[in-house]
Length: 186
Image (tube, rainbow, N blue to C red; front, top):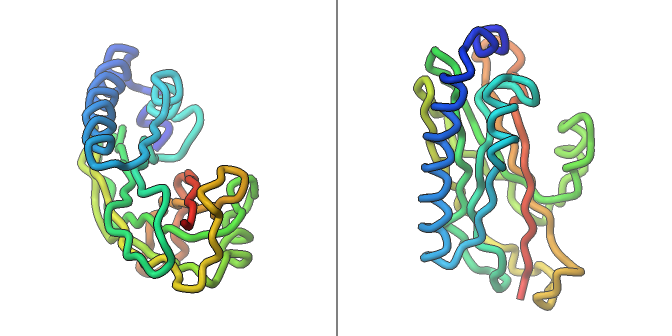
């Protein structure tokens, strides 16, 4: 994929970045209206990812989530925004969410094996992303009834990891990108 993206002109890269930035601004406004936390890549990060300098393709461009809830609460409005800068449709994509300290690990498999098993592992997919467009994929899960309270303190949080990957029906899938967010139990 990186070769295909490197052949693109700077104007094409900028056009993709502008479209994605507009979409992310809209999604951020929508998230705020719903009381969600939203984070997204900066313009510089988006340009590097579109060029293929800092990621595989497609990539996670933003993430919206409920940042606090009580034990036993169902969370249904967490979502990842995935962008495809490639000239071809990307399919058999999944976004998985799991809890535990894994963002700094080089091998995401280590993070999965060390995940917090009290919290669910959920996936959205399979889905596809058309060329030069984005999609949002949502997650629904229950805060474990026995989850310890963080007391709404930013000093004590649960870490959620979001992983984008592409499945292969008869082979090994491909890790594409990751992000994280924090969650507080009240």
